[in-house]
Length: 385
Ligand SMILES: NC(=O)c1ccc[n+]([C@@H]2O[C@H](COP(=O)([O-])OP(=O)(O)OC[C@H]3O[C@@H](n4cnc5c(N)ncnc54)[C@H](O)[C@@H]3O)[C@@H](O)[C@H]2O)c1
Image 1 (cartoon, rainbow, N blue to C red):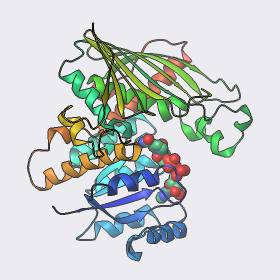
Image 2 (image 1 turned 45 degrees about the vertical axis):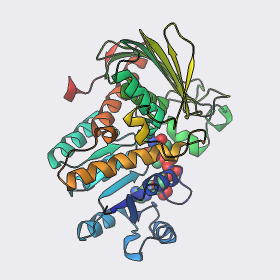
Image 3 (image 1 turned 90 degrees about the vertical axis):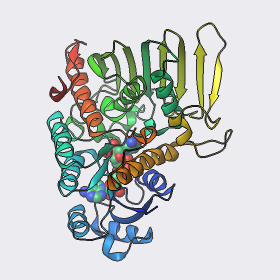
Image 4 (image 1 turned 135 degrees about the vertical axis):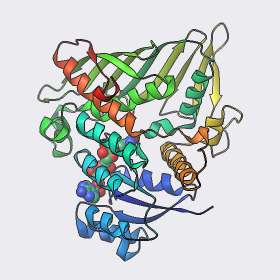
């Protein structure tokens, strides 16, 4: 099988998310890392790129230089990952899609709903893949939850409860720390802080697993550290397209919670419980029976789970492998296009630009509802109303 060429923008030395992308993209040997503009400082980016093994002429100092350089090559990259700070995602993603590249963009895909609609339109018009890195949806047992819901194991779903509540910004003395302060400053972060950063992961998971979209929501947003202009804690109630009731709590002041992403799904025939910090176990409570633990790697769980499990049962798999599953989906999707054949349905699960757009609409809906005492508001982007 021919290898695909992969490039990255952002993810420079010391960045938070760069290493997880490089591990994920490299894990199955589907992608060769051949190009990058890794840092906002040109020389640092060129230097680090070469230390990671990029050829000098493909360790670019700037993403525009990379776009021009790659567009002119016969062995151009097949996929580019955009892992720069949020405010740059729209411009970079738009530029690469326009030149015919497939893109995996970090979340949030854009800063406004209008920009997100433009990206969806462009991806459709160009026929290029625009994926968004809701990487937690790559976990094998999250995919198994989705498969169990879709095949009816839980019956009709009544309630989904999602949490992404950590305690990393709980120190009021940190409010002036420049690494934290920008996140709660509307001029830099936009209309929402904690919901836009973490809540959207939890909301995407609720949609991904139930197969339903968020239609309306009501939000109680709070700045628990009062000097913050934007929220550091929010409780969001929502209703989904197939009637599921959603409950979501997100926080950055939840001291004692480390990562704090969990998902519970309650149906008429059973309930499921999963936590990102113990991703290899899924708790399944069938109605009238005893609580069961489903272990990742057991085999014969579902095509979606079996395809995304690499390490023997009883050995831990973690977050970079969830990212690897998004990359493995993308490799299959790109190859299917190149070979003019249908994509394996068990791999056709990577989050799309449409998901990025729905998240953006939810971010603005949460901000609007939060300012109006929790009034119920339409959470759908205009394009999907
Ligand atoms: N999906 C997830 O689970 C997840 C987790 C963490 C972060 N993120 C997202 O990833 C993105 C990056 O976050 P991070 O925490 O790694 O940030 P970071 O500040 O740790 O790193 C950002 C990197 O991008 C580089 N950079 C900045 N501007 C650039 C430009 N114009 N061209 C090239 N490189 C540039 C910086 O030099 C740095 O190396 C954010 O959008 C964030 O929301 C996603």
